[in-house]
Image (tube, rainbow, N blue to C red; front, side, top):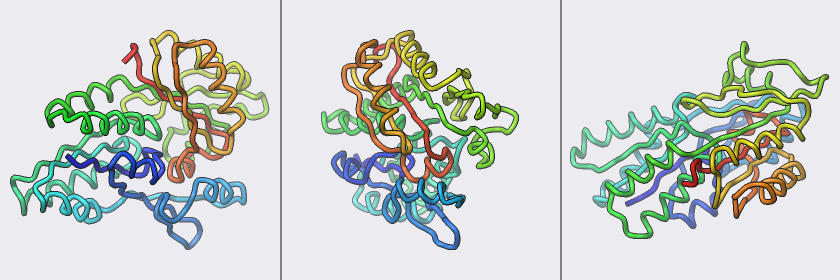
Amino acid sequence: MKLIIDSCSDLSLERARELGADVQPLTIQIGDKSYKDQFEITSEEVIQAIKDGKRPMTSQPNPEAFASMFKEYTDKNESIIYIGFSSALSGTYQSASIAKDMILEEQPDADITLFDTEGASYGIGLIIERAAGYIADGDDKDTVTAKIQKDISNIRHLFTVDDLDYLAEGGRLSKGSAFVGGLLNIKPLLHLEGGKLIPLEKHRGLKKVFKRMVEISNEEGARATGHIVHADAEKAANDLKKQLLEKTDLETINISSIGPTISSHTGDGTIGLFYFKDGQ
């Protein structure tokens, strides 16, 4: 079984290689230049462009790019599992679906399974890490896919951002959902629901948002491993990690930067927390 992923999982290329996953990059355009996510541009470069007043734009891989990647393995009769970015936030999953149909026209017996995680960033990354473990353990395809589906249903995404207007302008959040709070230090708490980014609550200051994240983690039985991502907010990410380790049953919490594509839409100052609910 071969894992195929896209760059919106926010796994580093090194981590993807460790897991045996091939990465299909999205494209980021800044001004008149285009870059392959992670392969040709870093998160730090995207954040600096935003600070310089530029507006990065992103686009999904075309079906031909996915088909070429799939064919490398279907030609060898290998099973493929693609674990992808939310179809409600990007056309990436649709491109993979079209590519699957293209392959099946030529190779009707090709074994390609696609998962729309309805997730983003390291929420997908945690699912991929577990999937790689199931494959390494020697589970059969049906068992692996059943476990992946269960993980998708149990993953939790919690986000806070500095500027909701940035998400709204990029089309990742409805303008009607964006509430103004910059001058009042109002911080939104958002989550993913049905693959869409939805405001959950709003709080006065980051400290209260983190307190609520800790409370929700406990309410939902988070334990074992969690992951925090940030966009140029490492100190805040470490503050959240400290609170979670002290006040929840999470035993291990890793921290990494939000990837170039996701940070293109969230802007700097974003913090994301991911874990599996109900002790899963």
